[in-house]
Length: 397
Ligand SMILES: *Cc1c(COP(=O)(O)O)cnc(C)c1O
Image (cartoon, rainbow, N blue to C red; front, side, top):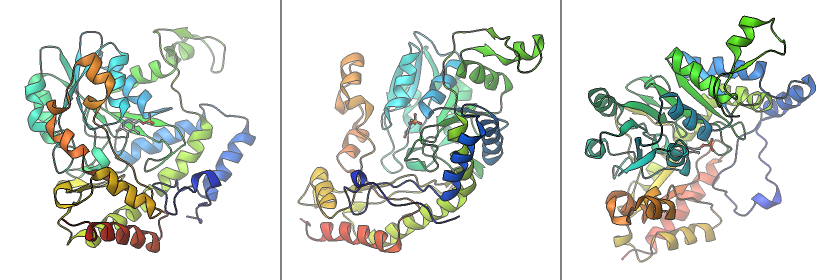
């Protein structure tokens, strides 16, 4: 990998060590320039190549490139036939997309609490949330730690439900030796700017089911049938047929040009992320005031995020004050997430109260996401670790 372009424009230099920097090399830049010169800007040969390579990478039969993970989720839910009156089980500790795409189809997201350690959906609580309207379970591999897929699959099989994975954090992640992307009926990935590999904006759906793959592809492009195109006319002719009211969710070749290089480097990116996680683990191991990320033995963690939980009962500052102290030292942070059930949309439209999902509610007061990305230098990792240690040590109760 050539040296990444790390110089940030002034506007991004808010922190000495930002929460995130994308790792974009000269290869990506050259490839975008070549694509621009080629004259083929939107969906074309580079998208097809990215789909093939991504399918191979996760070990799935089919991969359909789209312009975001949000689009991927929408299409996956549509493909299994989710519609008005249906319910889909969604973890409350997730990004907006996971719930909103269910609502886009007229269905209702039913929120499930998280495990206190992995912060993934608590699979022991899934069954109690199933009703006769439930159609699917939509687990999110939080931070890149795969959910308990054996238990989720077992419940789904027994109760006749579909499983769609939100794998926005999970390139590459493994469960029981299998790559995420080859486990469930449908898996949705994100290539958003701050994800583990990026195309600026972009996403992918993977599946082993040809019918689902065909439906996702059809609906990603206006419901226009390519088969009809081939059946009735020579390749490249003007003829096409609209079979369904589809969406405009296709990925561009400009984006795929970036993605092909990012996918190639994803092993190196992942190795570096794992090293940073181990460095933080070691640096914080003797601080009982911090709860560190757990890794269950059956999983390979993607380390998209490194989320600490600060024990506010043992410290003289709360989570927000802790964040202010980190930021004051020049280090960027984030919080993943304000649980969905605590947002106005879910409180007002669906009647949730904060205490209804108590683990997520209490975890929310403790979580802080620290910088973790391949271009962090050893000095930067040490500085972040020293900053956190210093804040803990000077605010013990
Ligand atoms: C980023 C993210 C998404 C949405 O990804 P986009 O590609 O930005 O649409 C969905 N789910 C989770 C958990 C995410 O973190």
